[in-house]
Image 1 (cartoon, each protein chain N blue to C red):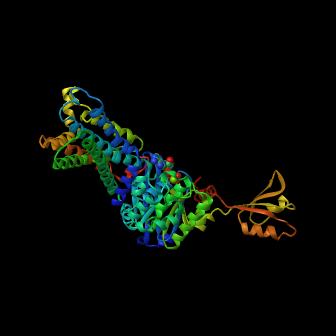
Image 2: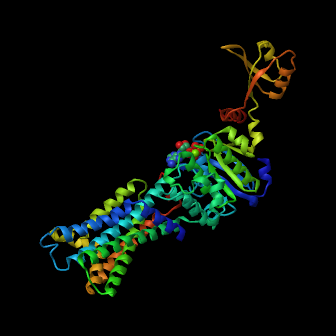
Image 3: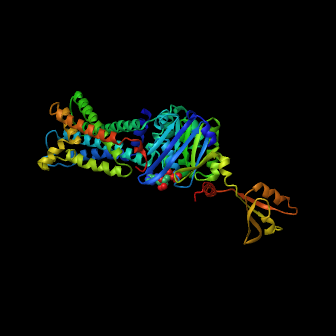
Length: 310
Length: 246
Ligand SMILES: Nc1ncnc2c1ncn2[C@@H]1O[C@H](COP(=O)(O)OP(=O)(O)O)[C@@H](O)[C@H]1O
Ligand SMILES: [Mg+2]
C-alpha cells in the first residue's frame, strides 16, 4: 500500500476509487479502491463469492458501479477497450458456432488489425494443431485455450483473466503460465482472479485479497503470503519423542500420527529455525519430509486476526 | 466490421437449419399450392403464381431476418459470446449494426430462391426492369425485418429468443396474408394485416410487379415499424446488455 500511494495516479493503468456495486439487494463490492500500474502481475485472490468477477467486470466497464470511479489508462473503460488496449478472458463465455478455431481467432485478431498474425496467436495458445477444428467439437480444456487465444489476440497492454486455469490440465496450465510470464516480461500488465493461494503466490508479484466485496490485503505477493507464517511439517523420524519435538525453536504444536508411531506432524511459526534444529539434533534420521504452506483460508484467518475482524 | 459480417453470414449458412426454414419452407409451400393442390377461389385466381411467389418470398425473407438478427443475437448475448466479441475494438454498437447487416443480407437468398422457382416452375414473366424493381422493393423493405430481428434479440436473450421470434413470425406472416388469403378473416383483422410490416411489404411487392398500385401507405407502414423497432433496440443497447445472465 505504501508503495502504491507514493506513485502518481497518472501512471496507473487501472484506477478504482470507492467503488460499490450490488446485484439488486445483494451487495457484491463494498468500497474498493486500488491502482494498478504498468507491468504488474496482480492476483485478485479470494474465496468464491468474494467479488472477484464483479470487480473484473467493473474494471472492464461491463458493469456500472453504483458509486465510485473507474478508469483504465486514464479514460473510461469502454474507451480503453475501443482503443484495443485491453484483453479479457471471463467466466461463462460462449463461442460462435459453425466456425473453425482459426476463423474465430482470426476474427478477433482482425478487430485489433492483427488478422495476419493469427497463426502466431494459435501457436501461443497451444492451438497450432486445432486451427481447422470446428469450435463445437472442442473439449473443455481446448475451449478454454481458445478463450485464452481470444484474450491475447490483440497483444493487449492490459490483460484480465478470471479464473483462467479452470478446466486446464497440468500440462496446459504450465504452458499457460509460461505464456503469461513471457508477456509480463515484455511489460504487459496482467490482472488475474483466482481462489488458489498457490497460483497467486507462484505467478503474481502483487496480491490483492478480496473478501465479501472488500480489499482486506494488498501488497507484494511475499508480504501477503508471509502473513501466514505457520507452516506444517510432516516427516518420519523413528527416534523422535513428542516432548523433544515440542521444544524445537518455533514449534507450536506437535501431533503423532495415530496409525504410525514414527510419523509426526509439527506446526511451526519459524520453518527455518525448526528445520535446522531438527536436522542438527544428532542421530536423527529425518525422512519423507513434507512441507505444506498456508492455504487461502489461513491467510484470511490471519488477516481477520490482525484487523480484529472475526 | 465487414470481417465480422462475412463470418457471421458464413456461419449462419453453414448452420443448415437456417436455409431449411428460410428457403425450403417457403419453396415447399410454393410448390404445394402452385403445382400440387388447387384451392378454388384462391390458387386459380389469375396471376396467382406471381402473387404467391411474392408472398412467400417476403415470408422467407422475414424468417431469415428474424433468425439471422434476432435468434442469433439473443443466443450470443445469452451465451456470453457477444460480450467477449465486444471486449475488442468492435464496439457493442457496431456489433449490433453488423448483426443488422448480416440479417439483411441473409434475407436475400430466400427472396432470390423463390423468385427463381417462380420463373423455372411457373413461367412467371415480367420485364427485367420490373424484376429489378421487385427485388429492390422486397429486399429493401426487408431492412425493416432485420431491424425487427435485432430489436427482439436485444429484448429477449438465450433460448427464449427462439420462441419470441417464432411468436412474432407466425402471426405476422399469417395476418399479413403471406401464406393464405385473408379473405376468410373478419374485416377488421384483414385491415390490420395492411398495417403489419409483412402485409405492407407484400403489397409493395405486388405494386412493383404490376407496375402500379398503392405505394405510399405500405412505405409509411414499413417506416413506422422500422422506427419503432429501432427505438426499442437503441433503448436496450446499454453496457449491461451483453451480460450472459441478462
Ligand atoms: N448475476 C448475479 N446476480 C446476483 N448476484 C450475483 C450475480 N453475480 C454474482 N452475484 C453475487 O455477488 C457476489 C460476488 O460474486 P462474484 O463477483 O461472482 O464473486 P467471485 O467471482 O469472487 O466468486 C456473490 O455474493 C454472488 O452471489
Ligand atoms: Mg468469479
